[in-house]
Image (cartoon, rainbow, N blue to C red; front, side, top):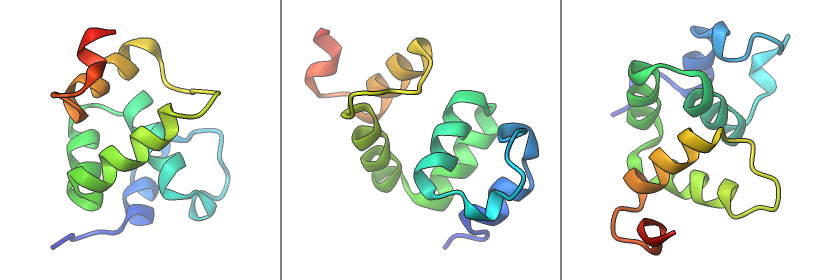
Length: 92
């Protein structure tokens, strides 16, 4: 059972979205992207607890399937390998 929702999570971590005035308008996709790009390991683990690993991986997969990808190359590679360990990403 999740103890906090995704908006409570991001409100407690203004350093992830330092340029956003009203974080309550951010959607799950944006919050996940900011957490993976700018968060520390504890932030990422808490985000996965809130969304669940399946939902987190689904959102990430949707984001990286788009033409424009906002993830840093190292972040992108790391989470491809961790969210999809048995996929074709290992051979890219």
